[in-house]
Image (cartoon, rainbow, N blue to C red):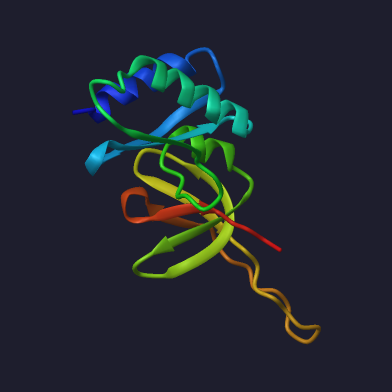
Length: 151
């Protein structure tokens, strides 16, 4: 049976020396392998194909049948790693907590325990001035942070 550690090792080997990094590996029943990568810049389809081919070249299809999918982490996934969060400092993110629900704002900073976000200013009218809002601190393990998609 193909295991997560084996795929992780193959990915790290292939990504060494690049600005790409492994975010997550899932090995599902029937050997369905999902690999999620991110980058300090961007991940393109050719890079996903290159990683897929590297992994496939190290596995024996005659010994075990498998399905392999390599994905760029993308905008819809929560930011899990420091390296991902660092990329979004000063940019708009969406924080989701049980207590406050969803909140949009700028990622100010983070450490191992907390994330600091400056909430987006509330829309104002000509009659009512904008309210000053203090930065909010969220417990990292209880908060999902995603890039904000603003149209």
